[in-house]
Image (tube, rainbow, N blue to C red; front, side, top):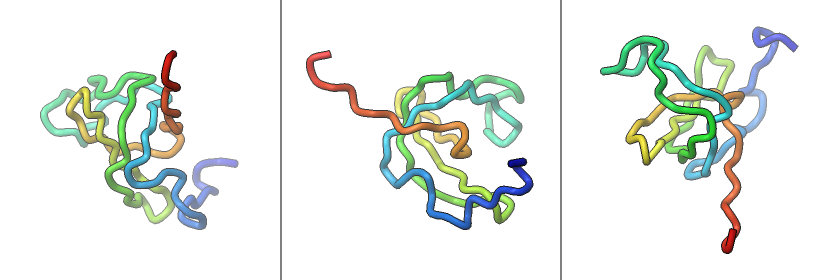
Amino acid sequence: MREKDVNELDGPPAFEYGQRVRSKKNIRNDGTFPGKEIGEILVKKGEIGYVTSIGTFLQKFYIYGVDFVERGYLVGMKSEELEPAEEEEKGQ
């Protein structure tokens, strides 16, 4: 299905407030992150963050505000850019 045919808002958000998530790919500044150059990497693939807000974009998509604590960045991301980050088991 093409992106223009999808309306995520027909269902519940894929992630919850406070949920620990992992970036599925490198995220670059598209010009909406202040103080960084366009194209500069904001978040690297595999970095862990926490969902702090859930908004919408174009009345079709959920946008998750993800706090990447170690980096000190709050980045807006689509669900396709995120996956749940399972807690590491103790002793591993």
